Image (cartoon, rainbow, N blue to C red):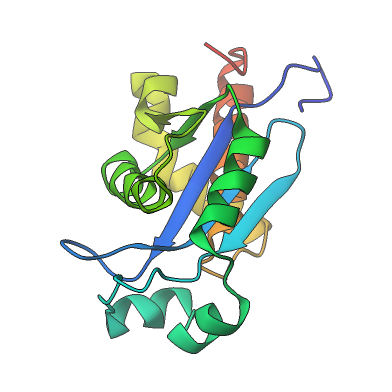
Length: 174
């Protein structure tokens, strides 16, 4: 929350995946909630999920072995997401990818999300969109966010959004 006006921040979601393109699937889902908490779940891949891209692993540093040992079953991840995000509008900076991976996760669980995933771009003015990457880089450095992990990335997105809104004096929600 923003201390100055107690207006809640939008909720942000980020997904790390086994790779890109056909056959890829979510391996970690992280959210930055309006109250400042984060939710992060490693996903144990379903038996039918075989795709693996070593280049993607070199970015997120999550191995298949870590997922097998520490990942949660798909049903549990979906349950935790629905509990934390129920009824919320949830924003992503990579909506096309994240929507596909979230759909794959929920399809595997034979469920539908109890929240709506939306594009970050819906929240931004033209000026904010033009400055997004520059401000995001500064925020990532300030937060010492060197890990490319889902909850850390979601926190960077949320903080970047708040910083942009503060710079323009605009309310946190549209």
